[in-house]
Image 1: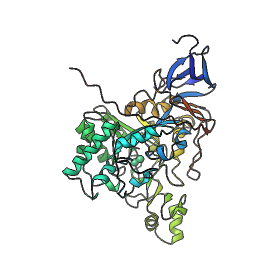
Image 2: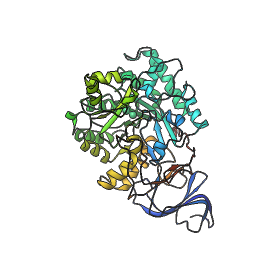
Image 3: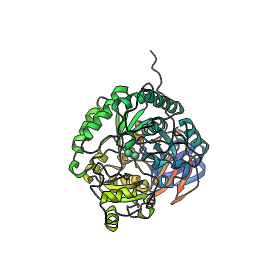
Image 4: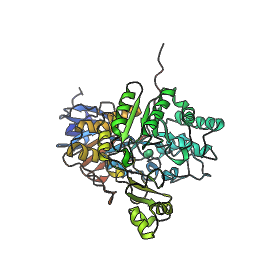
Length: 489
Ligand code: ZN
Ligand code: CU
């Protein structure tokens, strides 16, 4: 299939390829040239500038993190070690209604928008300015980004505590149009959060109208993942139907003890809806979630760990119960004193998490929040945890399925062309890992420990992580949406 004596930039020899399509693994060499996969097969007689011996290792497409809040981290922590060390080569940013653009310098950001706001050089007033900054100063991973509805509300509305009026909707629409033209892959909402709680379904449909002609994605942290999760799913699907666009349910879960087991109802509903419209979902492999510190909606019902607190940075990593006892106040009072900040909430059931992970069409997304001293361990551990703990150790699904859930399925769902599967002509995003030893090392106590078993990570042909060390490569690209080819009559 290739001429004899082809000279590659990089040749991965003697590995076992898991190509990201769910197909069974096979033995092959992989040749990389000019940042692309150039050949897959027996390449024994060929030469290369650099060769990696992958004997005993799996060779897979670089993992795509379907749900991140890395919007600013890709600029301010551009080595992205917390992701690259897991084998992640592409991140989807702009989730939960929160994006890095468009913003103004003269505005105060409410929580949770301020969770990602630490711009190294001023805020981005347009989506194009944000993507241009990423191109001018690339990070170590590829980025595909969405525009956040809560961010749009904050930039357009003086009062977030009501639905948007017609003028405000028009102004948000104009921003969505600008983001689409700049290459955003979709729009996200976070109606669970105070800045968007008052947004009506109609507001969301109208603001999202520019997505329709482009079949861009609507992605949502739903209004409710607890008692009213079924109503929230119905709202999400109705928005997809109103605009005839694909929807993604972010970090699907059912929270609070009295809802445990409800995935027996939500997943069949999602499955049934998938027969009629385009639906995706993702999940992180932990029974604790993490977000801003809040005291409502039963968030404090279970164990709570403080991840970070602006007024009390010394409380990071501590149990809210202990803090409350020490201060001689209620749990709620202690949480209020710690605001603004972020926390880890133990509020899910392991059986539900496993049921969602094992659901055929569930993608893997970390939902990691790259701020605070003691972040949720998902920031450093998500992908090796699925490959090691869930696939190998407890046998939830075969390794090929695990890889597909973090590569091919994700690229297909988000429309990332030329990524997600090992194919000739695709971007050379590749991870080499040891299927026997891969495991997450990050824990709630020590959340920033790099995973074990990741041998090499290649981003657009550049070796970026090798033998537990970052090489310094910054070869990430901006992945933009491709408009559907117009149908010819
Ligand atoms: Zn979310
Ligand atoms: Cu999120």
